[in-house]
Image (tube, rainbow, N blue to C red; front, side, top):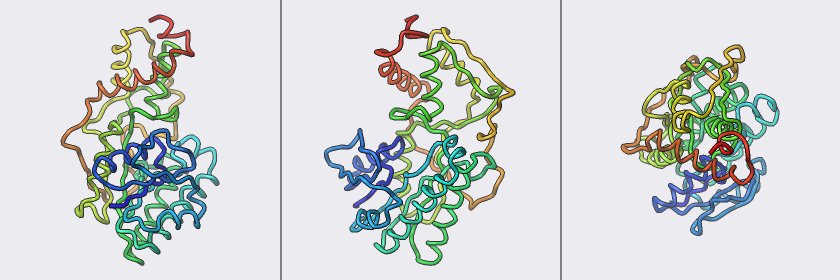
Length: 301
């Protein structure tokens, strides 16, 4: 099919675009920024989702629309509510309207497990608003959709806003990892490549007009993750906790407080081992930092 991925130059969007291409789809990427991962068989469109005319032009002739565009960093969203509301909610509404007018077969929206929570600030509330709007477009206009509620993602191409990427960089630069919290917080990490495959599987009719959870296979305490990283680095780093600075933007054990529409959970039959995934990320961060850093673990070998 002909598929367009808005926000396809970013962390998750670029991996989903790759998975779509590998599945044989004709892929276009729409983003504010040039894609560093664009494949020869992918088309790139530079544009802003707030530009309805540009969005209409891009969606014309497409069959499937994925939306990964918008403010995706919780801290940034918390500090810039107006920009978050405008970009995430109005931008998504532009894509919905263009999808309706162009009779798109499926609108796929990248949401988050934070929609179940009181945490997540304006990031969470913007995603909740988008989900409600998508469901209303379906009721009123019959626009078919799938909402993807992602858990904690990690993997290659992540920037500094990704927590695992940031702590690996801190470990290599400073020889330590500082965690705001006591380490008992629980997450279900999923490698971005596994998440991307699941994000393509949901094009089956089974997931039409459904909310789908895409998260890891097992729960992991943050303290156990940090010990794993410490051991991978030959026990050369220190782990520091700041329980008094527990971050109010993030949930501790479970996001489930609010009750949005129930979601199915999709799991891949094959998945990247978490330890191997961390090793790959660590190797990537090391290669980026080695020419610039002469401290921490890098200095000490």
